[in-house]
Length: 207
Image 1: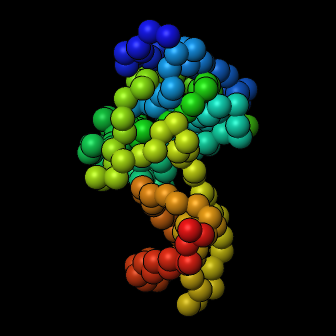
Image 2: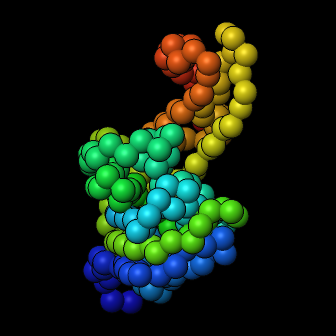
């Protein structure tokens, strides 16, 4: 088999309609002589405000999807339209233009879909996705073991009582991994009620 050179992949969608039907935006299968791929950039905006309510799903290797809302995936909640940008995510416009640059690995295929919740008005949507194949991936100085590594998204939606703890990340002791990012959004009668102390508990390793 001839050596495989890294290749770029991606697409763009312009002046499409987003509604409460799940629609496929991007579908890609690795070439036979490629070992892995990962996304490098995802961007979405709408003409009105439906973008902030959208649900984006990344189906990696035919498995259950990584499902997210663009603002929350960027670390923003409750309709904040502040324009900001850093290496991994940001909002590029006052009417929402979310950039999500997280590396999402896949070993066989990737399918991306978009959808609005029932009851949200339809809107005109624009999207871009870019990725690359067979290129080593390092995050924070940690080399990611591809193609075995997968992104795992954990979401919690809980009502807490005073002095309760919220478990942000749970992983079994048999799993090695990297905690890449956390987003915390809360609502309370007293906005000073959140105590921002994180506790990290590392259990016994399987090996």
